[in-house]
Amino acid sequence: MEELLEIKDIRTVIETIFNQKIPFNRYLGMRVGSLDPARPTLEIDMREDLIGNFVHNTLHGGVTASILDVTGGVVAFLNLLDRLSDAPVAEKVARFAKLGTIDLRVDFLRPGRGTRFVSTGYILRTGNKVAVTRMELHNETDTLIAVGTGAYTVS
Amino acid sequence: MEELLEIKDIRTVIETIFNQKIPFNRYLGMRVGSLDPARPTLEIDMREDLIGNFVHNTLHGGVTASILDVTGGVVAFLNLLDRLSDAPVAEKVARFAKLGTIDLRVDFLRPGRGTRFVSTGYILRTGNKVAVTRMELHNETDTLIAVGTGAYTVS
Amino acid sequence: MEELLEIKDIRTVIETIFNQKIPFNRYLGMRVGSLDPARPTLEIDMREDLIGNFVHNTLHGGVTASILDVTGGVVAFLNLLDRLSDAPVAEKVARFAKLGTIDLRVDFLRPGRGTRFVSTGYILRTGNKVAVTRMELHNETDTLIAVGTGAYTVS
Amino acid sequence: MEELLEIKDIRTVIETIFNQKIPFNRYLGMRVGSLDPARPTLEIDMREDLIGNFVHNTLHGGVTASILDVTGGVVAFLNLLDRLSDAPVAEKVARFAKLGTIDLRVDFLRPGRGTRFVSTGYILRTGNKVAVTRMELHNETDTLIAVGTGAYTVS
Image (cartoon, rainbow over all chains, first blue to last red; front, top):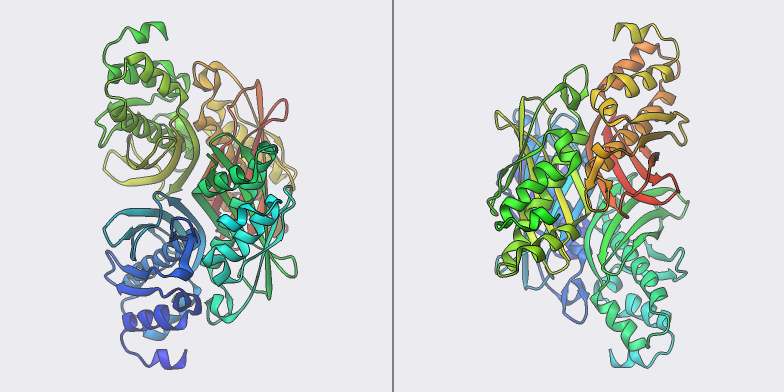
C-alpha cells in the first residue's frame, strides 16, 4: 500500500490497484479501459481458460459475474470520489479499501460469444452508506451479453 | 463429447465434465465434492490467484459468484435427471448441454476468509422449462460466506 | 374472457384486462398510461391506503414492487405480440394468460414521496421461453424512486 | 407515535405498528402472526381484491412481494432488537423508523392458490449498517409459493 500513497493522482492509484494489485483481476486478465465517472469501462479478452460452455466456446458465467461485480465497484467508488474531492489520497485509498459488495444480480441475456468483452456501468443511487449501480457487458460487436445490478457499502 | 457418451454412469459423466471439461472450472480449481441430488457440493481451495481484497487476503467476489452459479446448475441438472431416469445417457448429456443460467443473485454476507470453500444448494422449483435453486458457500470452519439464488433454463 | 375476444384490437384488450379485470391492479388504482411497445407506462396516484412509512407518508415498498412487476409483464407481453403479429386475438389472449413472473429484483433508491407515480420499462431479452425486462418508477417531478429487473415466462 | 412510546413492551409496539399504523399493511389485511425472533410470521387471508390472475384466482405477485418485503423488515428489526436489549423503548422505535429496504429479490415458485398465506423468514447477516434476510411464503396447505431475499439498512 505504501508505494500507492506516493502516487498523487487517485485515478492512477485505482487503475494500478485494479490492474495489478487485485490478484484475481490479474488472473482473469481484466483491465481498466476508462475511469470516466459517467461511464467507466473494464475489458477482458477471451481465451481458452475463461470458457464455460465447451461446445459453444462461450464465456463462463462466473467471468461475466466477476467483471460486472468489479465494474459496479468502480462505478460506486468513482462516485464516492466526487464527494471526497478535497480529501488527501490516503483517505481516498482508505475509503476504497472499505468498499464491499452487499449483493449482485446478474442477468445472462445471450451466450458469451466474442473475442473481447467490455463492461460499463452507471450509478443509480449514491448515499453515505450504500451505493446502487447498474452494469452491462457487451462483446466486440456491441452485442449485449449480460446486465447486472449491485448494491455496495461505501463507508 | 464422444468419449463421454461411452461412460455408462451419468454421474461420472457430470463429474468429468465439471472437473475436466469446463475450462474455467479447471482454471479456478473447482471440483465436484458430492453429487447427492439432495445436497451436492462443489469445492475450491484458496490460493493467491483467487484473492480479491489484497489487504485482507479474502476470496474475490467473482470466485464466489462463479462457484455459486455452477452449484445452482448442478442442483438443477441433478433434479432434471430424476425426471429423465429411463432415458439413455446421450439424451441426458444433450439436456445438460442446454442448461443455462437465466439470472443469479449473490449475497456477500461475510469476508471470504479461509483455506477451503464448500458450496452446496437445493432445489426450490423444478419445472419443464425453468428450475430455481438456492445456494450457500461456507469456509472450512463452516462460516457462511455467501448465499445465492439462481434461475436456470432446463429445456 | 368471452367478451374480451370480441374486441378486435389486442391493445384495447390488454388495457381492459390491466385496468378492469385484474382485481389487485384495480384495488391499487393502477392504470395503463401508454402501450407503446418501446416505452409502455403504468400510473398510480398516491393515496392514504398506499402509505408504507406513516411518519414520512411515503409509498409502501409493496406498491412499488407491484407496479414494477406489472410493468415488466406488460413489456414482455408487448414484445411477444410483435412476434405474434398475424395470430388471431384469441391466441394472443391465450398467450397473455400464460405469462408469468419467474423472479423480480427491486432496488429502492429513494423514499416514495409524491402524488403520482409513473412506471416504465424496456426489454433486455426476448426469447421463446423467457423474457427479461428492466423497469423504473418515477414520481410526478421525475425523481427516480426505484428500479427493477424481472424474468418472465412467455410460453 | 406518542401513544406508542407509552407501551412498555417493544414487541407490542411492533405488532401495533405493523397491524394498525402502516396503512398499506392494513389495506392488504396483513397481520403479525408471531414475533419469535428465530421465525417470525406474517399472515394474510385471500380475498377477491388480492387476485392477480383472474382465470386461476391466484394471489397477485405484488401481494406476494409486499408480504415478503415486510417479513424481511420484521426479521431485520427483531435481530437489531437483540443488540439494543438495554435501550429504552423510544430509542428502539427510533431505530425502527430508520429501517429501510435496500433491495428485494422475489422468486415466484408456484401459483398463489390458497385461502390463507403465511410468510416467515430468518436472518442471514446482521451488521451495524446492513441486514440480509431470506423469506418464504406458504399457503394453508404448506405449499411453498414464493421465496425472497432482502437487504435492509438498519442504522
